[in-house]
Length: 294
Ligand SMILES: N[C@@H](CCC(=O)N[C@@H](CS)C(=O)NCC(=O)O)C(=O)O
Image (spheres, helix red, strand yellow):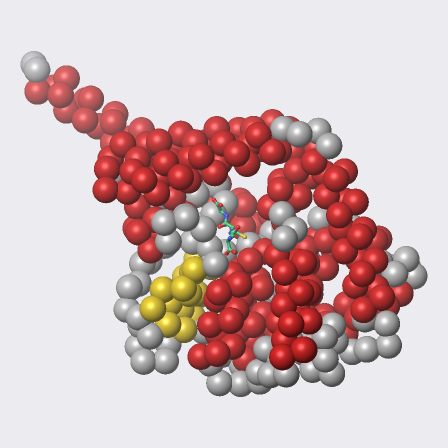
């Protein structure tokens, strides 16, 4: 991951990971505005680059997306969406009329309140408990290691460690996924009513509400829950989602509908290479010190 602290006048830089849910939301906004920007990949997969000191200095919460624009660093997906709509040219995605804006905010807030990462990881945990457990232990070890050698970042690493422990506890709850599925059903029931006979969620135009709900439906499709609206289960959502997928922004972002195995393989190879070079380094030092003692 190449770090960048300064941007040229109108350059838009996004610290990004292809299948990250929140990064996809930001990329959708960028594509709808017609400014795809430049992306810098932060491997939040097996490499866990979000914990590296350089990245933690950029965003102390150690998460993507992070936006860099006119030398300003913007974190938090919601803030980035608003920032982009207010600072970039292109179609306005936030309605001007107060009433419509309030309605858009309500729909965005409903999606933002859903713990997407708990749901996605909760599903993996249900299928293969060991993978998530190992992943969490690796996160904790890596954060502790970085914390030891970067005392200036101790506070941020401590918070990150607490966040991982909390997350681990939530994922151990056997009812987590069932509860979240109930929550999704309620959300989709509301959406089904809202999009009846209309092209977009809030007004006659595409807004940030459509951005987040497109990403939400796509994530449900990715984890195998498309049946919640397809084949007539919720026909208004079915039509709405087809329309959203046909927008050029869906392919431009791009929004992923399959978790890319390739991405995981590349990341795993990088981790393996790192471990191998560490082992080789230790081996060479050991050999040199043994030969020096003769
Ligand atoms: N509150 C943050 C959440 C961002 C977030 O959950 N990012 C995920 C990717 S979608 C991430 O970076 N996960 C890595 C980690 O938490 O260690 C936001 O709204 O941007």
